[in-house]
Structure formats: C-alpha cells, structure tokens
Amino acid sequence: MLSFILKRLASAVPALFLVITIAFFLMRVAPGGPFDLERPLEAKVMENLNRIYKLDRPLWEQYWLYLSSLLQGDFGPSFYYRDFSVGELLARGLPVSITLGLCALIVALILGVALGVLAALRRNHPVDYTVTGLATFGITVPTFVTAPILQIVFALSLAWLPVAGWNGGAPANMILPVTALALPQIAIIARLTRAAMIEALRANHIRTLRALGLGQATVVCHALRAAALPVVSYLGPAAAALLTGSVVIETIFGLPGVGRYFVEGALNRDYTLVMGTVVLIAVFVMAFNLLVDIAYALLDPRVRHD
Image (cartoon, rainbow, N blue to C red):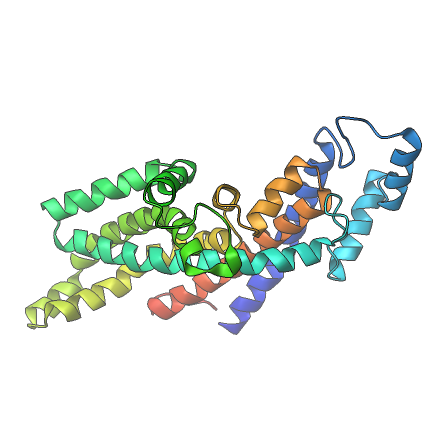
C-alpha cells in the first residue's frame, strides 16, 4: 500500500504540471488583459503596470517566473485586488468554501445513501418509483434554478431565512446554500446506491447470509459494504468540487469563497487569481482520488495495491 501511495504521488506531479501549463497559456491567449478598462489608461501608465507585474516579459519568461514562484509557495499578487496577494485571498475564501462544501457533502451522503438503500429494498414499489423520480428530477434541474427558487420561497416569501450573505458562517445563512449545493449530489448518490444495492443483494454471499437466518439489518450492512464502492468512487471528484467551492452557489448567495474569487478573477482577467484557484482545485482532485483508491482497498479485500 505504501508503495502504491508513493507511486500515485509521483504520478501526480507531471499531471499537476500539465494542468498548470495548459491553464497558464489558455489564460494568456484569451482576449483582453487585467488592465483593459472601458476608459483606456494612458500609455505610460499601462507601460508601468506591465513592467511592475512583469507582463512586458516574453511569454516563456512569464511562465518560468510563475513556476519558480509557485515552487516556493507564492501564488503571486492579485491584479484586481491589488492590496492582497492570491495566497491571502485563497486563505480567506477557502475556509468558507470548505465549511459550505463539507456540510453539503455530509448531508448528501447521509440522505443519498439512505434513499438509495430504501429504494433498493422496495424495488418496483411506489417508494422506489418516488425516489427514482425525485433523483432524476434533482439531477436534471441545475443549481442556478434551484438556488433562486429557494431564495424566493424561504427568504423573500416566507422570510424564514436570509436571502444571501455569510455572516460569519451563521447557521441561518448556511441553510439555503448548503441545501442548493447538496440537492443534486443527493440525487446522484441515491441513484448510484440504489443500482449498487440491487446488484449486491443478488450476490451469492448475501443469499447465503439470508439462508443462514441472519436479520435484515445484518444483511443490509453486508450488502452496503459492497455497494459502497461506486459511491466512494464518485465521492472523489465530487468532494473536491464541493470543498473548493461552487461557482454558481457562492455567486448567487454572495459568499466570499474560492468559487466567487474564481468568477471575479476570470471576468477581470486576473491571471494569478484564476491560476491559484485552478491549482488549488487540481490538488484537491488528486488528493481525493488518492483517498478513494485507499478506501477501495479498505472496503473490498479483493482489491490489492502492490
């Protein structure tokens, strides 16, 4: 297992390098620049800004300078938030995104698995049809539709919860964004769990357990362990996306998370801010995929990593 983890970590380095390289050159090829305004700056001012931020250097030199700074843990200065570095902005936004994403992930995992197991145990019954229908609906309706609906119903019409804002992570401010972020994940996990549980309940060892007279709860626990593999596999990229912030949710609810900084950085051509969020998300994806592979070996003894 240790050798497998070391190999995966080693293979993650060139993958991360490739992501950084592609993102860097795509950002620079895109039209516009960080200092392009509706009212153009004077030529001398633009020249000074380009010199200060080293944008007057050749592209290959800018790329090398960025890699050198990144290896030292420096994400560079923000072109839009000029009083802050990218590292400072990410340090401010990441706790918000992690708190929001972790709550949504826990809610989605608990409700999604419970609904999937219930549908599998009541296959071809009204409960199964209801869960499947709601899951399909939850997958097809995007978050930029459900989030405003939640705001209109529970914030504007009923006035039960705040419309937007973070307010230091107050529970009332977290309910709507966590719900909007968790709903599609609940639907996907429920579908995955239902399909995997139906297959697991047909397995020979589950039939043997039933033939031995074991209770329903014991049988479900054994089947759930086998059915957890597809869910665990999905949780890798899903957890990385949730914990690094949802662009849509954080923008709609006005949350100061990483996703919102990514949107503002892209709109204002803040090269370093966009690159910082891309690197952060890539690291999270690779880390969670590694955790998924480790969880596979723990859940299924047939899986071995040499």
